Length: 82
Image (cartoon, rainbow, N blue to C red; front, side):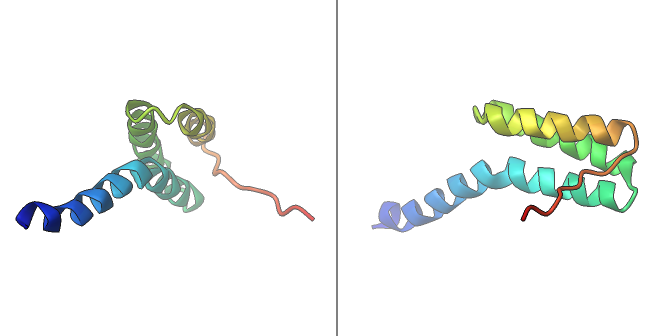
């Protein structure tokens, strides 16, 4: 019975771990938007590393692109379409 009670928690943890690179990427973008590039760069590096470890190659490539902006003191911004 105890094993069955842990299963939902384990699923939630795995889902949280899988979303962590994306959350770290968002945090890095927020730091950069506020001009805190000294925080944005290491946060983006950590997000990229986590994404690569989890096999999220596409996400890691996107994070790397944003990281390159932060390294030259520019925030990441999207344009509204439509």
